[in-house]
Image (cartoon, rainbow over all chains, first blue to last red; front, side, top):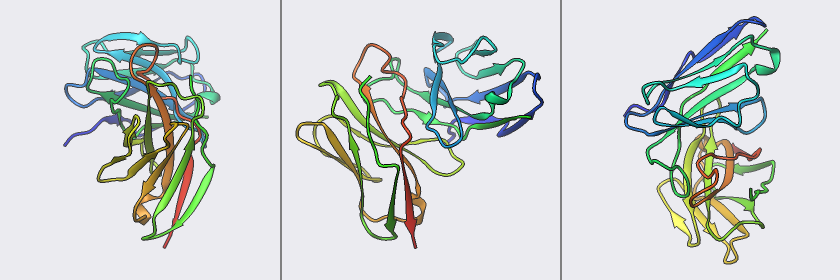
Length: 117
Length: 113
């Protein structure tokens, strides 16, 4: 069956450019997450949506990072004026339940590898 | 948040069992123990989770110590496709920020042919 998909898989940007990363969650999944993974590290939480509502954006590194999920399905993570330290893999995950805790499983996409030159 | 401690790396031979340990001495009574793994160039994938009792599924087994301060992920017969980084994660049952996964560095498992 269809899993979580992300596009593009690879993105190279020049410092200062804006980028937009797309996530298509599993159909019907209420919860959507973005994580950032630096080389050699585990993923780190960026933001969380429940349907179209962004309930937690505490992990976004700066105000250059913006995420949206306007219709409660597809989500876009936008990074303005990219910097070299933004280079990382950006992972999207979705989950079926309304409150994703305890026993609930998150399904991850393959990630978008962003390289900022 | 309660933290977990895992060895940085482990090595195994193909077709042999693998026991991946995780210490979580500050675990609370309502924390679930989750394991995810991340194969090269892929996103993490769920492996197994448990609360108090040992658990089995098609991928692995999870053995939880009686005091719940440690757990062990068991791969019964390692294959080359099991080579990955394995993450042990605690998640609260409800409330707070239990919706998000807090990853450590995990254990890099190498499987030798």
